Length: 302
Image 1 (spheres, rainbow, N blue to C red):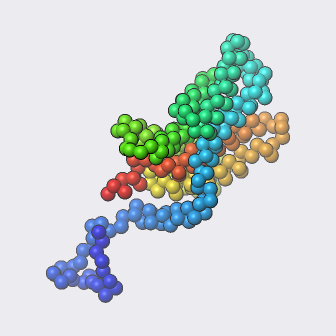
Image 2: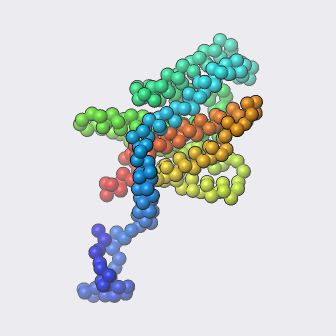
Image 3: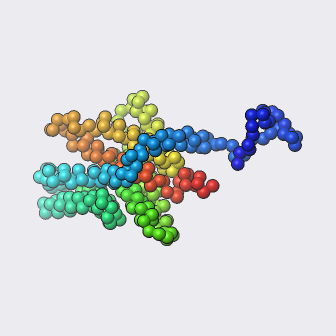
């Protein structure tokens, strides 16, 4: 605890009543404490502005996380023949298998996304959607595409935040303490979700042309990513990433401004909804908190 001293107390270089110079308390504010103090003020402002939508934040986050799967299912159904042609001619997958592959993907994405939104059987729904991500990476031959790989790691991080959110709610809903196994499982999944969420931003940093604005945004974003990973002022850092990614998404992936037959339209649309999913994961992180493996939680203990 810091010493309580008034304005007339010992000055610089003064001696204490017991002789010798006055030493600063060993628990003097560290740089982390200074950052925590400033960001706490910003978090208070954010809380006051977000108060009306706070009860709806988990529902918004869950919907945004699965919106890329909903869009993908609709795209497959509206471009069914094109999808079959690509899988058969370019991926050399037999005709019957291509139909089955697309059908299973559409059913899995539609059903599992619905379960995530209505908060039912979250474990099975998240497992099904992660399975879709893996099978599509293999089926479309994109597993070695670094940008695709990093984006989908972030999407899976968002899905893990769905699990964390469902377990947090389950713990609050029932009386009594959770078992040690449940507590450990929640902590590990919260940590994994936090770490995976920031991979999209890493992909963003190392792709595209470098400009002064891109350098500034990248540096700010990387600091926020580190804060998210270590769980330091998570509400502030995750909100900052939400703002950065949302602005980037609107400015760069504005597919609605492109002509219907523009060659970049489908890619921009795909990227737009994937970033929305990661924004949803960050919103859930803001709502549920970083979990036990974080600086924020350790600070509460000590």
